[in-house]
Amino acid sequence: MIPILSINTPLAIINQYAQNTLVDRLGICFTSLGEGWVEASMPVDERTYRPGGFLHGGANLALAETLAGLGSMLTVDILEFDILGIQVSANHTGSVTEGTVYARAEIVHQGNQTHVWNVEIKNETGKLISTARVTNLIVKRNGK
Image (cartoon, rainbow, N blue to C red; front, side, top):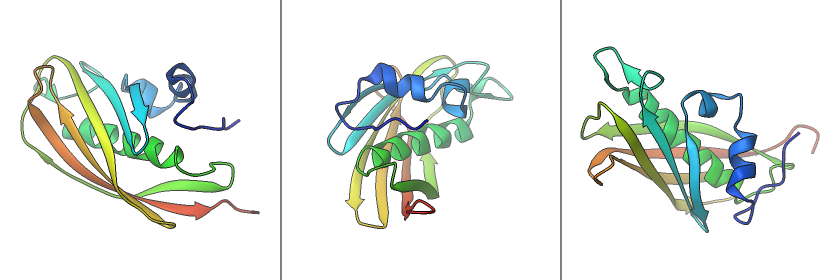
């Protein structure tokens, strides 16, 4: 069952909603949210490595799309609308081999049919590791 989500939803409930999904498998944990922004952390370990022991760029993209998806879900009635990620692109500006990365997504366009998000991913010292742009399509659920 889909819970009703808002910026007032406790983080524990939002993180519980992500259990048994890719979000959970990658160790992504939502840490903070507000009007027009969402933050999360992700471990740099065997779940998120590429061969060679570096953080996988695809894990960064999954983190970015996860944050933007939740951000869009918090702005619409998710019982009436589906959120579909339709475009994600990123520039990886650094590398990480251990620890945790931290990401913040901020909405830059909130239309009726599309949302556009900027996402910055940083290492534990605050160095930019990746910057991403995510576009979500907002569509009416079937039967509504």
